Image 1 (cartoon, helix red, strand yellow):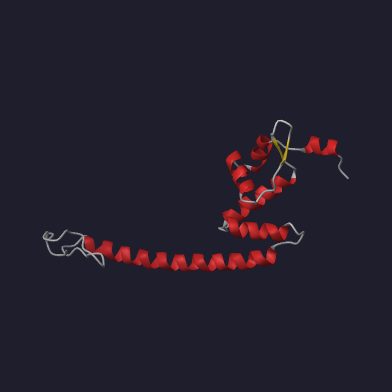
Image 2: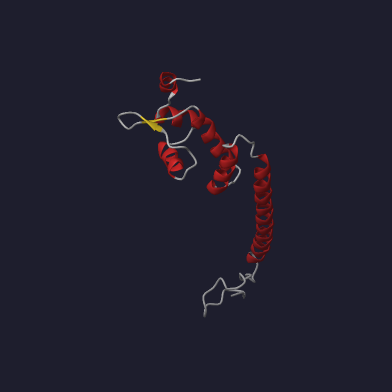
Length: 148
């Protein structure tokens, strides 16, 4: 069991936390405000002092953000994690949903790419293919060779 003196020796400053976790101080303060990080202890001079666990928590937040999870989703996973249970099951559901969103976006982008490729191939000739809806040229201005 740690004593108060031991806790004081292991308390981390904001600078130590940000350096070790690779985040900025304003990020730490923001995560505190929205509840992703617990409110830290304060010194008599009102300086924040963090427990070692905050480093792991910040790394978890950064890793899950990198996977595309929102801060709300991350908060939900942290709530499960804080009970001592691994949040793999709810994370799996979230990641499957994000994967489906990525697949849909990739399909949309593939269609857009095909449309742009087709349009570009028609622009070098005399008949400039107009975007649909719309036209490249303003009303009353006919491009040379057609189109518009």
